[in-house]
Length: 507
Ligand code: MSP
Image (cartoon, rainbow, N blue to C red; front, side, top):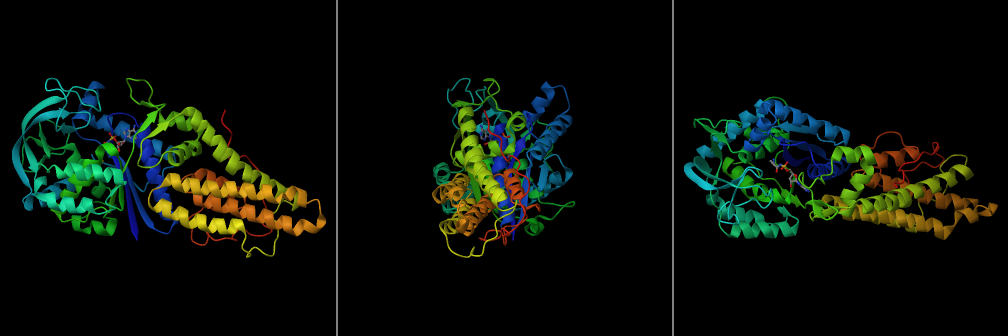
């Protein structure tokens, strides 16, 4: 089965920030999980390049919109490579295949009678690229997100007849899993209950967009164009007919997005797909916003966390661990440096790192640099039982994008393994020759538990997982969980390589 996972297509008005990195890392973890769990995955990310915001940014930088877009798009691509993001596709909405798909899609929707000309009047935020329903302050209103003045617009636009889809959208969002998490679902139900209005899908006097066929002077509204990137991104070679997209991974299993763009994904987008007669995505997951030390991040505040600098300073494991293990996915989260350092040291360096170090060094010292040879690994013991429960819990958590819960369950297995060592005190037992068999047994159990920890943590911390598996003597990269998530895979007598630190402590 093909599982398609998407990040939003990021605006290229500025270089990548921690918000887009957060979504991308979460999707990466989910995509890695799905791949390891035996699925064929199409993981799409990319950039959203049209619209007035981009046009103005390019102008302010004195370069052409197309050069500006290429520059920022390549920064995104390079950043994702640096973070080892496992995306299969990177879509640019300025590509010719995207343009063709947008035209075909528009034609379908138009044929279905869902396009009309009309007059659009209202307050517009260029930062959001969105008309505001009810701007605060009648005179000179300001966008509550961007803190910038809204602009009054009065123009002839093409409209998509969203109002026709009221009942269908109500039915869709009342399904228990379409909008996740539950708090976001309630927000959307509330929005839709107020009545859906037709929305404008074209702009006049904006040249940086895809021209609407048959309507001179109109370009497509950036959101109409951008959402279609999820379809054009699936095309591998050249153009694909809309109805063939099912052979390329449509419908998406999940669109992961930030809470600010939920309406577009949970209401406008499904209605557009219904109109074109295409299948709907299975779910839309709206995650929360990140703040820094309790404050909103912003250029003007000078407190933006640059994902590239963060990576250079700390490496990928600590940052991924913090973002996915500490923040409940779906809720807002705060980046606090002290807490970040504490979590890295406590969870990764102490609980997981030390467990591996002390167990492998005891094995190396007392068993000639090898995994101890034992004869009774099939016996049930507390670690084997806990590992088997952890495996099924963690799979359930990953399935629901509950990364925090998955990380906690894995960490609990590592903590219990540390306790198991403390309780059984192999360092005392080894002093009696008669207990050597028992020492082998305990060390084998803990090493095997480390292997399961490393295997389960691979979606969240692929780098750390690989390092742990290397230390246990596994050098082939982990491709699949099939045959790996069972107790006893660690070879008895397997040689253990020279130890090397897997996660440095942070000061
Ligand atoms: N181009 C549109 C998406 C089109 S999808 C077909 C867009 N782009 S964006 O670059 O402005 O935002 C991309 C994502 O970053 C959104 O999901 C948004 O929620 C997220 N974030 C922006 N700031 C954020 C934080 N401070 N924290 C977490 N995510 C945030 O919207």
